[in-house]
Image (cartoon, rainbow, N blue to C red; front, top):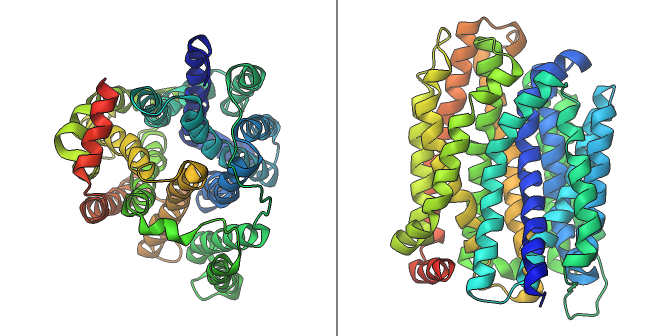
Length: 474
């Protein structure tokens, strides 16, 4: 194991990596209106700025976990951070819609390779027990904190520098991490000598998900049965079925389906998808409200998320006590319940309102977000063999990313269908846009309520959670 001196720096690097991945998911939201104005995105097409990152992240996470286990976690960590930094640089200099979407996809690929390597490096660089659990708790907490900070930072950077700065900010961080990683992190890899990569599985699942989300984005615009939408959608569904066949026949699948017999992992993956489909889409619609209805500047919009950021910090401090008291299932259910309450409070927002009206709902949501994000990763690591930790973390993170992309597409599709064929978000009056945003928050609340049900069915393992929490306190 690493020396005590290096362990502190190693944890800093790993936590920082998790922070920028989460931050990068939300930092772009506040910049979307400015970005759309410069590059000519419409509301439906603007989804691709979010979905390109999420789909690439979710699709390549599966192979990222396997590559991390077989080629070496530190090696993949460094390569992945380089790819992520390059995608950020290209995003900052993008001068067209296609260029920007491709850069976001490259960021997603880098994140997909980085995330499982980061979690596995925690497992291999820190001793099992209190030390590892403390490191895991800090790492997971950085995800929730990063999602909150990203909104505020995005507003500041967009207002004072421009939307390009929301990409450039990652570059120096990536360079810093790449330089220090070889010095502070120990290399580790799975004991197996096999080097087979399931390329067919990776291609089929990634392409399938992209085509399905493309259908959900395009269909409300051109028509649900229009050939240009439905044919790619059908192909996407076929590719996903093909992925299942491939995984059942290959010797080294991207997803060993036997892992889904572990209820905590399955529950964590489903929870991650529901979390991202509800809590993750909040930022998109709240940004629409603050900038398109209230006509706030980017920095004013970012500042309106500050209560959520603060409450997420508070929630992170309460997680250990929650785990010790009600276990993983109770902690996640509490987080989902708080989210549902917060979303319903946000349905009371008015076209003539202000940032003050946002505070009650976002404060409650921030606490719930912290409860869920950290706990779902703790649950996912329970009962998983060390050599498959990378794949296990990839499964949960895949659920998170794909859930966000599909959740946003489905909510937008429902809103578009309710508006009628000629209505678009760009042409709506503030009162109608506010109503559409209310509908989005109602859907978010329903998804959160579904998350409560999932947590009690799949994650009710109180004793294991209590032991984890006690270790974190030691």
